Image (cartoon, rainbow, N blue to C red; front, side):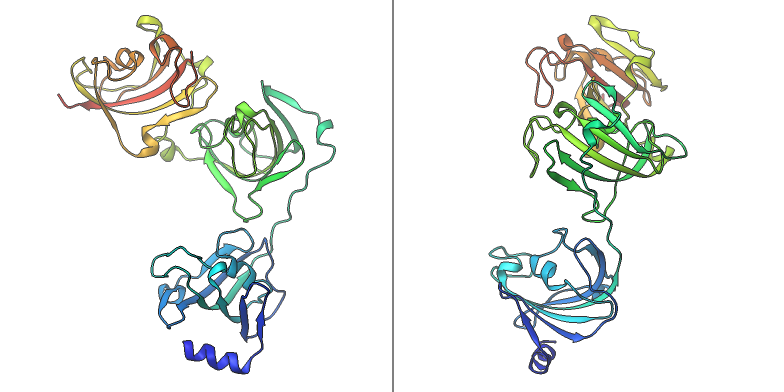
Length: 382
């Protein structure tokens, strides 16, 4: 392979940029060349300068698909594949600074110059980027909940999204000053989740309710329903956010939902009064011997603040949680709320701060917080 590269380098024009990246066109292609923002499909072989092959999509017979310019590959590829046409084959000589630098990666030693043969298989038309409408402040905003305003630029059709709906969207997000900080269209990669699982920020979880396939919705989100005091790459702490969201699909997956905990509509839950201010509701019946103090019980759980912010879930970790019931190893609300559960039973618990984390709070749980838990009991070990 290295001999081929040398041969063609002697007989073909070598393009070298200011950073030392070299590319040589071995076979011409057809059509418009690839540009940033377009999803492309390539076959490639990667080698070290001693001819050692460290990776090959051809050996796997699996082309690599990615969006050019989205930062998903090394910068030598981001620049070296610009303008490639379908059917074109290029050889790249990538200096360490545009590869993996001083970091060793797998079979690639630190500070390695990399050689690639890349064939362009397909180019998809990139998505038109969203631009911030300068009149967004004058939209007919509707306040859904405190801190969240919604405006529908375009109506959709079909079933409206609800808790438990699988929703797939494209989005762009801006700070209120007009700086765009993220867009799924840049990578041409839509995002999806099931509403109510807490995988979206709270402003999205609430703001996408009622949206239909085809809806184009703007969300104006106060920081406490966004990323709060956490900073992201381009989002300072305590930032209010603006989103334009295009809903691609809304579906229900009952089988997947059965394995998830969804944030309940708290005010519609038929709560029963327990001890010491605890409230509970049985949402799935069980059978068998009830959980008793002194037993080591096995549960799955998800916990939320009252506004729907998920702070913990054993289901996300894929591992049940075991604890000695009644031994004070968990918050008091759990010892009270799990006692008496039957295997297979699932309960919602509403735990006031006095039998939760009190005035101290814990981690993502603020002081004096009322907590909502979904707890499924699987049995005991003793």
